[in-house]
Image 1: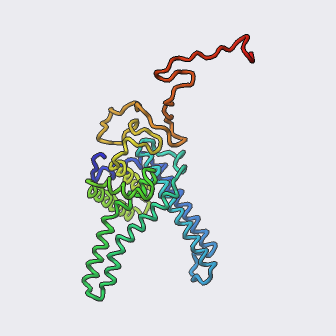
Image 2 (image 1 turned 30 degrees about the vertical axis):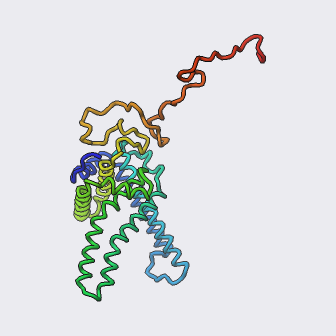
Length: 310
């Protein structure tokens, strides 16, 4: 784990989004177009009409429509996070791998578990406030404040758990333990960075009529990926996309000053993805025609005139 500051991930995110603006803005534009088309289809089919749901058919249509919108949102979240992770890892943001190999199932489980985690942590004080309302209204106020504070405090966990899963660093159940472990010693810094980023994005969206969403959302994904890169204790050594971490040190990492990057790793990791430009290491076993260490050389049998089958 390297040193994490409050402002460094934010500056990193906004700089990188302009370095690869066409890719990040294009992903958001595709998502926006798909959502608009889905809403138009909902209006055509009558799902978005003002009429109340009175039949089972209306209920099924509404549920299918909500499920489609949910899948589109999930696909967008995973795609932009995956591209940001590749960019942070040194592979760059490219259209060629923006929508390939997305861990949709793992992301579904991760987002579901984080939602359950947030509901449990925040819901317990709210439930207590409802039960103690008749005892004294002050209990309701205090527990309501506690629910807001807890929602604020658990936000880094809710944000980072899906990032670990999308980067295939852990399964959805292991990701919680990994996040709690990696946040030790830098929790308040990460919380401050995420909070400041949310405030900046909210202000930009307010004064630019949401046109900044083509910048703020990608910058947010890049900042989260950068935080994940900095706090993950084994990040420089465990490849996730088939890239040996020693080959391309993290962008702007203080551990690697400019000009000190190694040209090629001594022991590259095997490729985890077909589109990775880095090959798997050489086989460890010798070729069959060569003797193993400590064994005498075996002369192959003579094959020539006078031998069977010649």
